[in-house]
Image (cartoon, rainbow, N blue to C red; front, side):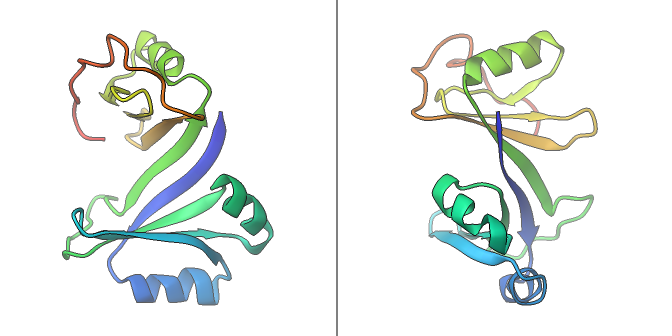
Length: 146
């Protein structure tokens, strides 16, 4: 398992970049906008982590700016922790066998979401290429929020 990033939703991208980049000193490693989803993602890393972040896409902070204004109450601005795993099906099976609800199953062999006992969302991503679709994951519906 490898730590990837922490996602934080922001209401003002310019003000957030001023804080994280200009004042705190993080550096932007990549940026992506999505017209259909109406959001922008900006990934930042500590200066000494920049080479690793650019090569491995970790460790980073992901700022998510939704273009349509939204209130973020109840900690909703904190998104999730993300980890790469060697076998997403094995990890999800171990979690499920331990009583953890798989909120977003790895139907695509690539991505799943679970929640910690305190409700923190955890994104699991398959290392390398996605695994071929397999049951019970392929037909398992989403459960709760992720």
